[in-house]
Image 1 (spheres, rainbow, N blue to C red):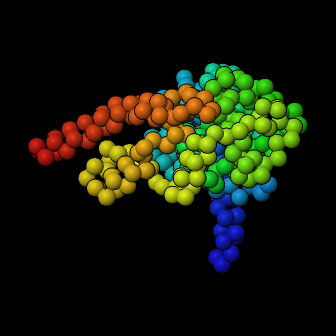
Image 2 (cartoon, one colour):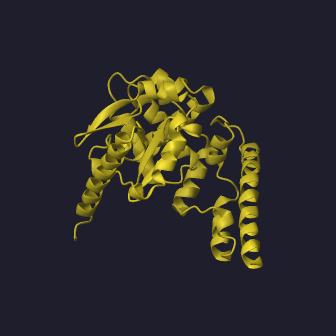
Image 3 (tube, rainbow, N blue to C red):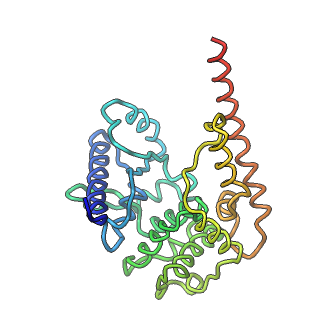
Length: 290
């Protein structure tokens, strides 16, 4: 295929089909998932195939999550690429019942796909991008199109205020980043969102990460026997990304120093790493002892 755009279009069509098949399968077995990321965002782009994604992210009622995981472990579902989410957990503070009650169905080639309310979709998408430290510059287009192609009755009160004042600064920061780097027109947004100024540390963090580019993140305990890869992973993690540390510690995005958030975020990672390392070493010891 000579034209790269033809390949991207075909990939977009294939992704739409996978999303439809995934939701249809789940619905046929009694689940009613909410699709997040992926197609739920791509449908806001001016052309659907511009937004590349590889799997179907589906969120479930936490009460159904265990059954969903068990179902997806069965052989007949292994051909479907899906990322299962227990509610929205760290991506949103609102109860699942609230988020689900405002979700709605959108037709995808004849299949109704349940998605978050547009206000919740923007807020969750912004938080997901910030959680990764804003490393993926290409994903900033998600914020751009969700704002640019919003409905006229978009409820900014719901989007900005429903998760509290700290997370409000996060959403406004993501929008302001699209304003400053992608020339997003903020006409019609609340004044505070239009005039939000990004702190110097925030801009420097993005500049540093975008120059280094996106990298495949690995669980450190799984690369202990590969020194070069382990060194690369540690190099990209330390010092902690200031944006990711801000989100991890529920700190507002403002002009205050980030050292405290960075140090606190490190403590959050020590325990999971130690557990992973212990499991890895125990497995290797047991294997060697046989």
